[in-house]
Length: 197
Image (cartoon, rainbow, N blue to C red):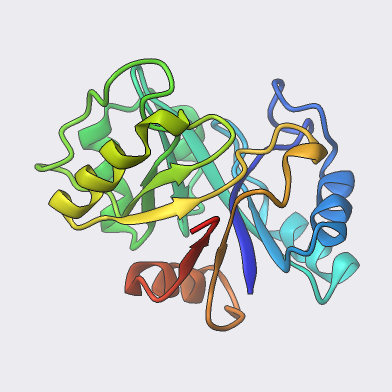
């Protein structure tokens, strides 16, 4: 199953230029099987995700969130708590909050603006984005070395703010997760590949 774990919609991310329905239709047209909507500091309500899944089946839609910290952005999948939207988070506090709730954390587009500034060894995320439209391509080998040193998975996501961004970067799961709990379990197992390789 081809899944993009990092996308944005204009309904909840002011920087996005694509409505969620158009985003999903574009993902289908580009051969994806699923996506996670990770709007900036906003969750997609569970009932709305259920409606999108009913409308676009068999395509799968999951909800996540991209948390903006002072110096980094972190993707969170598998935690539906509105405290994620309302707090000003430090990385350590966010890491503990998500870990306590069984969620998945990934460092988004590292080196986009500056070197990684969070304490990855002390608070390791589950994964780091190796590829995205906002991850500098010149940092690929450095990101791979960091991921290997800390034993993090690497991800390939579009970070789509526009429909044209979809389909270049995605992850391939061995099966279709029934829900976000299964999605998190699959991601944590590391049993997936990234495209491009």
